[in-house]
Image 1: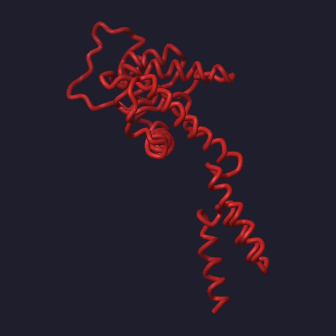
Image 2: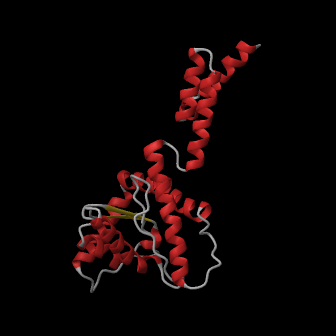
Image 3: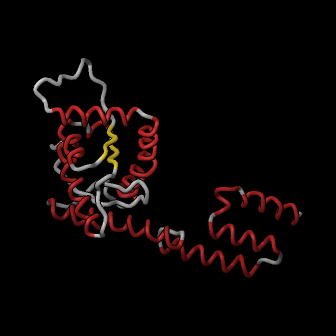
Length: 219
């Protein structure tokens, strides 16, 4: 479970491969709620964004009972859904989720999920070495996964505080800052130093324009 606003992982549980996503989703949401309550927060009023693998009537009805909104992608059905013999609360929960998922707001949440949640998972799997495991036992893999998730959250916190996600990147930026500051001889050099340290050049093209002006001045 990933917070789409802060990009931090709230909880990460390893389940058996023979269990489906919608079967393990209630346990994951319950554990995320317990973690949030430990820091004075709650999942009441929050919105769960998930793909079609998590779409099930029991999960949607359970979230509605817990006052949690859902924006879960609904798979295409060959025929009409049969509501005979099912509770009205289940039908209302499924209808509300379908209406929310097909709205412009829901599509925006889905795009946001792809930009934040999937990115966090990819960071843990690839950079954290969780794509494959060579450990025996569920407990040992749980420990390894916990360390990878903690490293990711620490990187999120460091990026929020100092603008860099790891100590090496911060040390390299500080070294470059000191070197550029000592070699700068003009106000333009000072602007280049500040822009490179805070990463402004990657977004606004400052580095390219300054490098072009410096090369023209050297010529």
